[in-house]
Structure formats: C-alpha cells, structure tokens
Length: 227
Image (tube, rainbow, N blue to C red; front, top):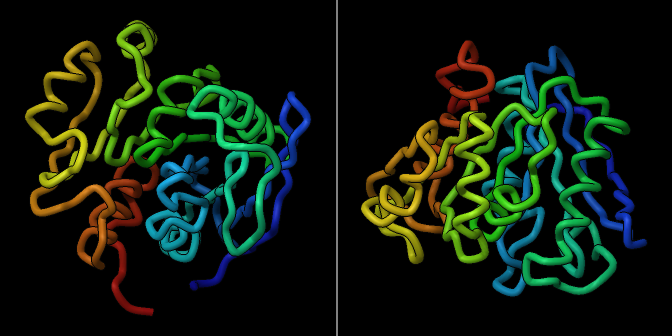
C-alpha cells in the first residue's frame, strides 16, 4: 500500500440505502478519478476484488489517479456491508446514480472515468450515462445484463469506451467480443493474450493498471515496479 489520502465513505441511495466504500486520493496532483463497479457479489465480487484493491493501493501514488470504490447493495467486504439486497443489475441503478453524484458533490472530482469489472461492466453500460463522465473502462465484460438497446445508446452517445478482453475469458472471448460490440464504432477493444476473467497474477495486474494509466495519465508511464 503506497502513500495516499484514504478515507471511508457512505453513499446514500434514492431508495434509502447506505452503501459503504473508500476514496484513495493522491497526496500530490490529482490527474483524474475513477469510480469502480465491482464484479458480481453472488460470486464473491466486492470493492476489495483484487484489481480494484491494488489500483487503490498503487495508482494514487504511482499515477496521480484517485480511486473511488464502494460495495453495491447487499455486498460485504473488510470495510463492512452495504445495506439492501442484491438486485440482479436492476435496483443497482440507484447505487450507480448515487455513487456518481457522490463523486462529484462530495469527493469533488473534476475529471471522472467509470470502470466496471465483469458484472460491474453491465452496471456501467446500463446506468453510468451521466454526461459529466468522460468515458468508460470495461474489464472482462460479459454483457450478461446489457441489452442491444443499451449498446446502441453508447454508439449514439459517442463517448470513448475501452474494453480489456482476456484471451481465456469465461464469458466473452475476443472473437465474440468483436461481434458483440460491433454496434459501437468508437470502442477500443484491447485483447490481452494469456489473460483470464479474474486477471490473476502480477503480470495481469500490471497490464490492467498500465492500460488504465495510459487512458488517464499517460505521462506517468511506465509504472514503476519498485518502491
């Protein structure tokens, strides 16, 4: 865990729930902020899912990138449990909208990217449509809960989208992703050889953090491997 200003947060949804989370802010210049949506909690996903925890531990110091993490409704991590029950990507609409508003009003972000991982990519594509968001970053998108209509929304919207597609993904491999996302002309599909859905292993983590930094703070590349 590298130096950063870290604080617990509480996000209040329009339907009356309290969601717990954390903000990790650079001690120096804040070059951009990422709001993260975690994998499916029914499969163990949470704000501490390893890519997000490592991003929060490293990127504020290494790349000047602020990381905002939280548990969607009914999700538990070391920081605690968010109120409510898992909503199958339906009632999580309130979580997404509340978290985006919290990022701007309470955290005071100036430049916000939204990043989803697995189930979290569905939440991003379905509900992270706030015009203040610069772009989306999708990690292992399964497109399980995303409709064709929602993909067409982003095609018309025109904002850039970057998707990292693992070669050995359990749900959507590179050839299938090319077909599934053909609706969106501005999407940048990055096929990652050897990677799997959960991005286990330090080489996979380093690749993901590098691609994030390339989008938000390319001047901070290459990321250091020592401290």
